[in-house]
Each structure stands twice: as structure tokens, then as C-alpha cells.
Image (cartoon, rainbow, N blue to C red; front, side, top):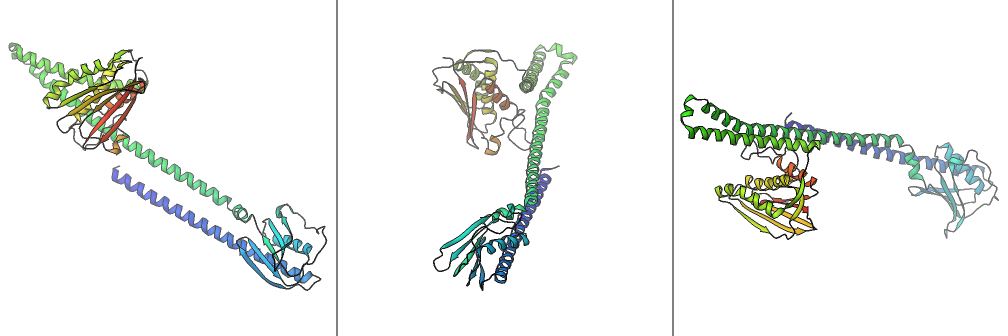
Length: 420
């Protein structure tokens, strides 16, 4: 499946999920609004029934002036004549149950002109199984209004949403699982591309030396070659060099395999970093001369001895310098510097090459990864060098950092503990 197809599938899937989420939010809001309207209607009907019963059953002439909704959970009943508080509470409980309004409430009786509080109580409606007469002195109030508050209205509204909340949680889990699946697919797709690129690079890298060895072997198999010793030696040398090249490539793959299987054995000894750098640089001088490049040294560290495997430490520095040359599209200008920092030695390798874009910097140390360059094979390698470098530094309990600007250059900085 191509990248465009995967991208379109992911886009359509996210649009579908966005539609589902939007629909879920819409219906949740609708359900909340409906529940709110239902509560308000039940509360009004219950309070109207309470007022009607008070008017009907009171020994006094009770007159209701109106029922007012002061806020989302507070109502008032305005009376212009006395009412009995015992009857009031009983009717509030009875009518709440009649309307299935199983929400706790508080009621209070207030004087109209000064808002003075006369009497009130909190009623836990769920704990009342039988309505009984209050053991208080029945007292009529005049020139007053009754306030009824539902302090737990929000909790009451949420009680019926347990199933809706459950389905919402299930939806969130599905979305999370879907997102995880998409990430896994993208990761597997990227891994597949990296492995394909590795196979292509390996084929390209092996093809040249194998072809060279085959041609040289054909020449050596001629009968007349024994009469030309110099030519014989020349083609034998070519075979030997190409064989070494193949061997080094195979060893690079095997080293990575050993790292993955934790079977790599390190031979730690005292190593002088400056001395090692000087020896490695000698091997790069012919390549730099051929490219008219320069390598500048700034070895300022005073403590230079570390406890390391000399062979692998050499490979680490060799890989960094080799990359500095390989990935330079102009005359190479390489700087190698050392300085003592944080009880150790810091080694930096700076180049003026192509640089690495930010999207690739987080992946540059992954196995088989190479900075994308289309179908061009202008730079040789398997994408194993920096993977090897990072893991070797880790085994040496060191650190590595990368700073790169596209078309400007790259700086690799590594750090190791020094021996006091």
C-alpha cells in the first residue's frame, strides 16, 4: 500500500472519528438540556401542587400570588395569607415523590419586606420512606414568601447519565486504541521503508565489489596472465582490497547484531584520547587531500585518558569523521576539538556538510535509518554507523549530542569519564 493510500485512509478515519465525537457531544448536550427541562417542569408542577393543597387544606384563607424561578435550582412561592409550616413540609415531600423528583431540597420561610428568615429545614428525600407529621408547633406566617432550593440538582441530573458516561468512556477507549493502531501502522510502515532502503543500499554496496572481484577473477583465469607479473599483481591487489571492503561491511552488520543480542564483549584499557585522535586523522589525510579539504584540531583538554575499548572507541571516532566527509557536498572543512567538562572529556566533530533537517534528527541514531535522498545512492552505507556509535557510547557510559543546521553543517559532541 502506497503512502498516498495510507495518508487518505488515516485522513478519512480521523474525519469519521471527529464526526462521531461531534455527534456524541451534541447528543450529550441535548440529553443534559432535556433532563434540565424535565427537572424544571417537575419542580414547577410539584410546587404548584403544594400550593394548591395548602390553599385547599388550610384553615386559613391562603392565596398564592405566584411561583417564581429565581435561579436554575431556586424557586419561590409568594403568598399573601398565612400557611402552616407542618403542612408545607409534608406537602413538599409528598409532591416531590409524586413527581419522581428524588432530589434533596431545602425550604425556608422569609418575611417579604426585610427578607428576614423565619423558619427552614433541609430534607433528605431519599431517606424518607414515610411522611410523618412534624413534632413542632404549627405556626401560621403572614406577609411572607417560601423559598425552595435544590442544592444537589447537578448530582440529580447526572444520576441518569451513568450509561451515557459509560458509552463515552468506551468511545474514548476506542479512539485511544485507534490512535495507537495508527501510530503502530505508521511505525511499521516507516520500519518497512527503512528495511527496504537498507536492502537496496546493501545490494548497491555489495554489487560493486562483487562485480570488481568477478572481473578481476576472469582476468586472472586467462592463460597469458602468468606472462605479465605486474598485471597479475595488480588484479590480485584489487581482489584483496575489495575483499577487505566486503569484510568490513559484513563486520559492521555483525557488530550491530551483537549489540542487539547483548553478546558484544568489550576489552577495557586506559586509552589516551588525544593520541588516538592523532592516529585516526592520519588515515583520513589522503581522502581530505584528494578533496582539497582541511581538518583543524583544537585539542585543549588536559585530562585525556579514559577507560575504554580502544578498538570500538576508534570505530566511534572513525564513523563520525567518515560521515563528516561523506555527507559534505562542498570542500570539507572539519574541526575536531576536545575540552574537559563535568569530570570528563568532551570531543566534538564539526563539519560544513549538508546538515540534517529537524524531522530526521530524532531518528538519526536508529538502526538502518538514513536521511532520505530519493533513489540516489550518492552516499555509501547501510545506516548502521550512528546506531553503532550511540550504542557503543552507551556501553562506555558516555553521552552523545547532535546539533545540525541544514546546508550549514553538523556537530556531534561525545563525552566520556576521564581517569583521575
